[in-house]
Length: 377
Image (cartoon, rainbow, N blue to C red; front, side, top):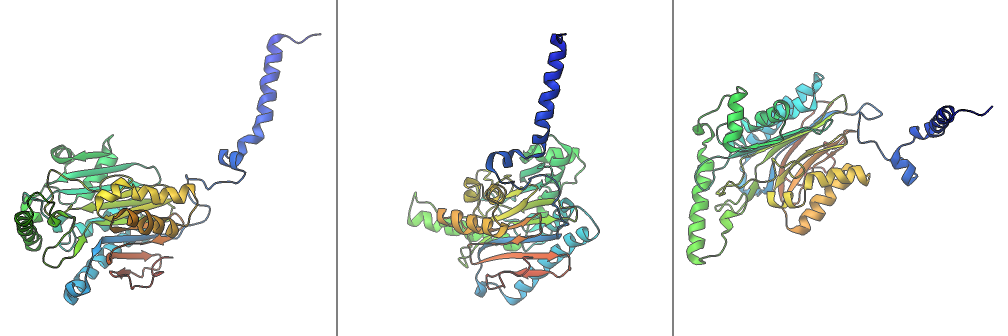
């Protein structure tokens, strides 16, 4: 007897499935390259070391212009941020919660260019930017040009969790804040005499340079420029964290640059430039934002970890002290991978930074003479 056409079709389907079934256990990458590539999804094979890394800005930070009293205050604020984020992780909390809490502490401090300590624009107002990203899901939220939100990082998280969008700016972002029940503060909350005087010095320097060389760009418009000390400080704050479940997160917040105009926005709220997290890597950046945007610094570091399988520290150093430095960009990053490795490279004279791992011992540094492996477990 001859089999019917329908029977032949069923036999062909069954045979094909049996032939292909073993192939389903082989990754596509391994089939093409002959070597298995690390998965970019899911938790690591072993329990990771959890921890938190923070920064309070990089730039030309001169020892002679940083008094012992001011240094002690900055170190205390950094330590407080580390302890707040670490407490979340120690109780089994998420990396997202840890970076949110850590950044909020720095936003509330007048010593950093974010939140309470934000610098003034050319028009004498404060404009705040922030971003947060969940490495496990790649969800992200960002805000820019805020003038009345006390803690921009909290609104950035609401954008991520309570809206279908990634970024909101200006009046629209603050309307969203009101709709979410976020209390808005009077602009007076952000006023600090130090930042105000910084603007006045920048404006005076700008006028002098314009009189001496009409039509030429002013150095007073360079990011972070202090015309009195000559220092260039990028006071952006940020945090990256790895929790006990293996999830990574990154968060960044800033007040922008002194004397900025035209609603300028830097890299901090730009996903992939100043803030980025995926299942393998999380990065928060600080520096001359235009360069970090052009070279998608945060994503570039994580892409090198993912596609070239580079160790985190090697990937971060290649971008910060290679690509970025060669392009003329100044600043640094903090980064963490899903195995708990830490990188904190910078190409400026200093970067406020800190790390705290499972052992609960805080490490805080400003200048590059700190032990290079301190805190990098």
